[in-house]
Image 1 (cartoon, rainbow over the protein chains, first blue to last red):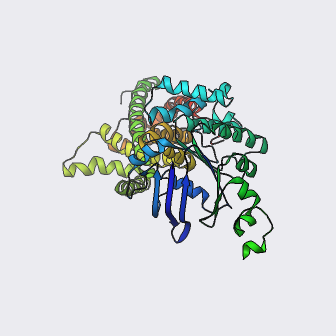
Image 2: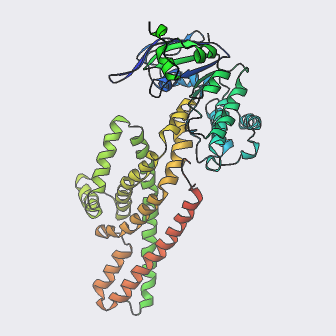
Image 3: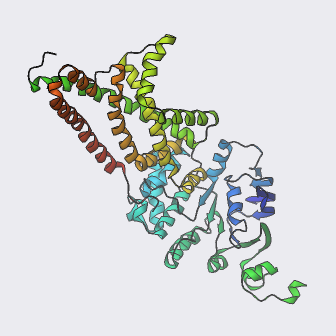
Length: 250
Length: 220
């Protein structure tokens, strides 16, 4: 198991956001997390790289417990080198060009040489078709281009896992496609991808497992085929706008 | 005063202008340094330091510079701490400027998107690297206009130091008028001219700097 989550609980004040989460994520697989806005998907991602402190439970990376109580920043820096993250708002650094955005992490966090980091960045940009944008500033890029750069920036750190937090939510349909194509191209490269998204078609085609969350709980973990064509819970059927079968209601 | 023509006043104003420029640039440098350090302390909510910074800003922004200078120059010798009027002016103006700069730069830091800093954290960047590579460059380019204003303000504020006998422009102007009321108009003209000669190039340099480090459309 690449990432294992056991009995995770997280509240903001009296508001329970994640309630007894158990999840196994296999190495090299694509896990898609779906659910209504506010169901806790993003918070769950943010617990995995320590952006949120969990209240109870454990998260293991391989077999190492990464959510020890009172872990310091240095501990999380080591974890964050291995778990990359890409967010909805791209969050490119606006005062740096594309290349500088990409080599900052490798040079400052991983202490790699500039030459090596640049080579890596150039190669990655080529792969996503943005070689000509290497000296462009974020403001000169379209949303889709920004998001592809943001993905490359995460890849530059050579992570084992990448967390995608609604990365296409702010994009128009044409751009959604170019970004999802990049994510798809990462499949079968040994990378473990954890994707929070509302893109059903993408989830169906790419996911190895679908995790469906509702109200802070995981209510269904299944294959895409099962989730989209015969979901087992009322919540999932409602989410997918499927008729609710009396048999399921019991 | 042994001044026969208006032209004899010019060297006096040149020397006074040099004093103003020297005190102003030194104070702007220290004020900027204080502002930068304190705004970062405010941003990271450093426990004790944060309260100290708030109290410091409240005090220096809300009391007249004249009185602050008076206290440092005439008050501190009573407890055996004595500075000459140059040092004293630099201390007072740096502290006043530091209070203003802290607020200006802090508002620049606050304008940086929190998402951006969060993704930097998710990348594993240390606080130090975030400050050096993300926070300071962006905060300065956002607040450069306010920094310019504060710098011009501080330069004019040097004139308040006449109360502690700093031989700057206004001090000299008053001194001359006190002796020769017939020179009031030429002295007034020279005073204004001295300030314009200092501040217009300074404003120009700052606007050059502003254009250089400013990048349009933040977060876009």
